[in-house]
Image 1 (cartoon, rainbow, N blue to C red):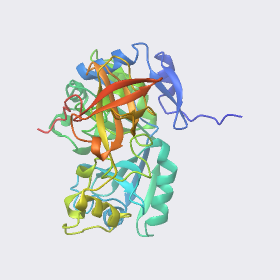
Image 2: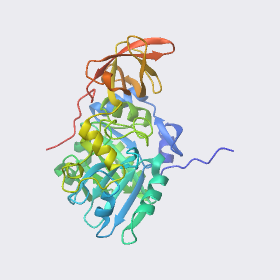
Image 3: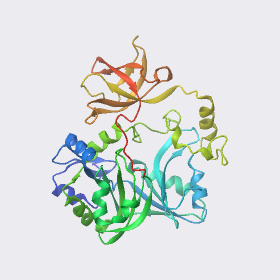
Image 4: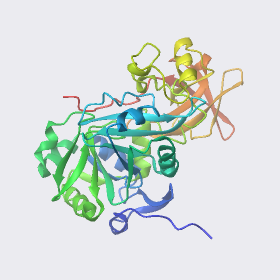
Length: 372
């Protein structure tokens, strides 16, 4: 007997709006709406897309040592994270692999943490097992999470509360929207300017309807969310990142704070630090995450094997689709380090045909975060 799928506080609204629902990370989630994936994608790039990401895990950490103790689990500077700022992080394991990636916000009196839906339970257990008694972990069960993304997102949200206009990329604050306190960060997963909004579950539908009433805003489902993030070179956990992949292999060096590197004031001290810092020092890894652009119209999907011109297998695609904004097939892959240089040519095996792809710098389309 199949397991009962969980639903978000906006489930009825999705069905009312004609969403096609699919199982995702244990939830019944909208993969697309009546516009369809391509038009939703292009609408988000041109105006503003609204996403329901309430399946993600939302947590709070309390205690004066919360930042210090959380920092011991990630290769990121949390101790000096200013109040009102958010930072990308990842949980590492003793083998240097990535157990999940997450967002951490300092709200002054507590840390607010958002983790991936598929990793939610293991992340909660990881924190429970590793945080001391003087750090309180609260799992938030009564809030939804909305993302408003696109070049017109700021203009739209400012109509509800002008205060959001003062924020820049990775700022976070607690402000009133739809008559209730929301946690708002100027961030997102599309490469566009925009906001992520944690809203009480019983107000989520009201806020969503208020946003959708603006002509610039359309619902966007998981399908376009995937193509948007892939065009902008953003990893999807469980596909481009996993427990066997180190941050160095994953080309996520920018996510390791200077203070936690070998010459930093709080060097190491996180799981797998010795291996990861040694990889940074030597620059020697067997494989690297790269971006690939196809030369035909055929999308190259996850799981496609990659070959060199002599037909030697040299890697595998971990995410792939046709990029509606790029106008070409885009993919992320792990390839042997000899083929990781920009301009390298590889061949993807698509149903027995070898399709030429070129290693290209990510993001494939410009990121448009608002930095002030």
